[in-house]
Amino acid sequence: MTGTAQPVKTPNQCFKGDILKMKPKIPKGRNSSGRNWKLRPQKRASSLITKTSQNNRSTSWEKKMEEKELRSALLEREKTSKEEKRQEVIAKNERRLEHEKRRMENEFKSASKSAQRLGKNADLKMKAMNKKQLRQIMKTRMNNKTGVVEFVSAYAK
Image (cartoon, rainbow, N blue to C red; front, side, top):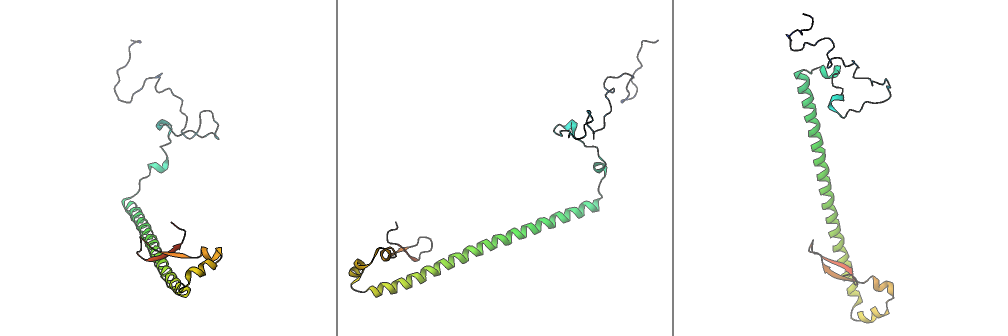
């Protein structure tokens, strides 16, 4: 009989003139237009180039373990360097606070000596001062953070 179809015996069998299998075989590395300067957009999963010789190769267990060790060593080095930087920042802040505290104490000592020099007639001497000298007069205030007496401008709030 010429009009009867053969039954499918194997799972991947295709007949001559099968629509699904008649697609032209265009290699994945080239555009269908032949314009090789145009890149194929690799957004869709169907257009991704996945079958390359690099993907088919499998790495040995020893090589995988070696890469894992290298990666862990790198992460450990990064961790230690970050910790060192953090410690440096903390030490720098402590040094800065200590320096600021020492500066305030020295300023207070020197100012108390100059206040003693003003003596009894401080009000008369202040009346005789010019504007620049009056701007340099400081008043004492307790610092809330450090608990140390510090000098601030007489006009500061």
